[in-house]
Amino acid sequence: MTRYIRHAAVFCALLLASLLANAARIQVVQAGSYDDNPANRRQTIARYHEPRGDILVGGRPVTGSRDSGGQLRYERSYENGPLYAPVTGFASQLYGTTFLEHAEDDVLSGSDPMLSPFPLWNDLTRARADGGDVVTTLDRGAQQAAYEGLGARKGAVAAIEPSTGRILALVSTPSYDPAVLSGNGSAVKRSWSRLIGDRNKPMLNRAARQTYPPGSTFKVVTAAAALDAGVITDLDEPTDSPAPYTLPGTTTSLTNEGEGCEDAPLRAAFEWSCNTVFAKLGADVGVADMTATAQGFGFNDTALRIPFSVARSTFDTSVDRAQLALSSIGQYNTRATPLQMAMVSAAVANGGQLRAPYLVERTTTDAGATLATAGSRPVRQVMRPSTAVRMKELMEGVVTEGTGGNAAIPGARVGGKTGTAQHGIGNAGVPYAWFVSWAQAEDDMEPKVAVAVVVEDGSADRGEISGGGVAAPIARAVMQAVLTS
Picture 1 (cartoon, rainbow, N blue to C red):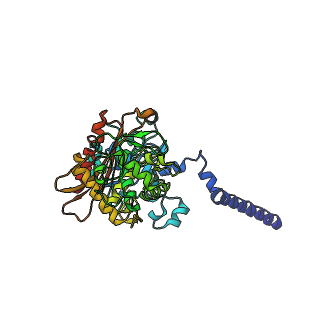
Picture 2 (picture 1 turned 90 degrees about the horizontal axis):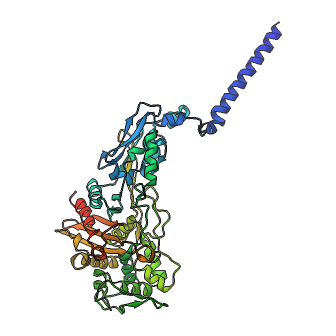
Picture 3 (picture 1 turned 180 degrees about the horizontal axis):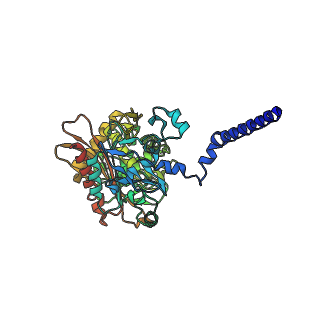
């Protein structure tokens, strides 16, 4: 009898061991597959069971969490959503996350191990820490000025602090309210269908994710390349530049909008945006040096993140001399984001040094303890310091004597460059209005802001666009907001 009891006990022990082994297999070995199974909603429920961390601008949150009372309890809310949508993106229970909501999701959702004082215990218990906060570099005044300046027009603004690379404004219009995508009901699905079907693309971040032909604003790059290469040594020496200019190897003539460009010195050609002078300069500088300068500014960079990815701005490196001439005036295959052109202006303002742009100053716990900081940003010498001095002089001349007078700010040094970018079949589209600039208050030691503005549907009067009538006033408002903050 004792033997049968012993056998039964051994059998029960084996059953228990089998159960424990199976439990261990499910909990440890197969945990990943169960976690990733679409039918398992526990992670989703846990993700939305606690409030999400916030995105801060100027020390104040522009996001929040609303208690819906449902199974997916907390939904994302936004303060002045359309103003900050190109920065925050959206956090949707149905459609995922974009922009900062995506790039910093680990911190905001509480899944970053750095948020927990006992990360190993959280791994074992599968507990989530409270969501952390993301502190941005944005200047509230500059962001508001850019948004109000664009108004109902389609376009974008990017503003950078030249000495650090901090992004002070990133605006895209038309915009949308990310809050309409936060929940999981039928209203969210209707909003999604409406937004993705809108031909004006309100969810497109035109400041960082849309490229445009930069037109005459690219002449900043061409002038810097010509000065660095020694093709131009004197800003006031006449250039050997016929008007009209026959593109090399072709019978195509390039003309100017105004008179007085034939053999114009670089200073006058820059102030009045002479296409013929800069097309010939680009061809004379050559593909290698033009490419080196353009890429120094950031063109053709596929790795730029701020921390979300930025569309690649392009300068074609496989061109003949005629194509190079057109590329050098911001046409042909040359394309740039507004953020890229703000980087061009910032490099000039910062003595030829370009700091990589960034949008997140630091991340913190919900109690405010710092998790990570942006730290010192990499610096790249784009042009010689002496070239940068002369480029600042040229850009100031555009505002004081040339086409950029609408950007002038009393009591401040302002440099700028207007641009008109043709597009469409046969260049039939209404030209894009561009303006790039930098500003320095009279009591500051260095420029405080560099700005790029593009307006897609500007005035149909091309002269107004090339004269800075559309984009320059927007840039001026943004610069004033930074200088007075």
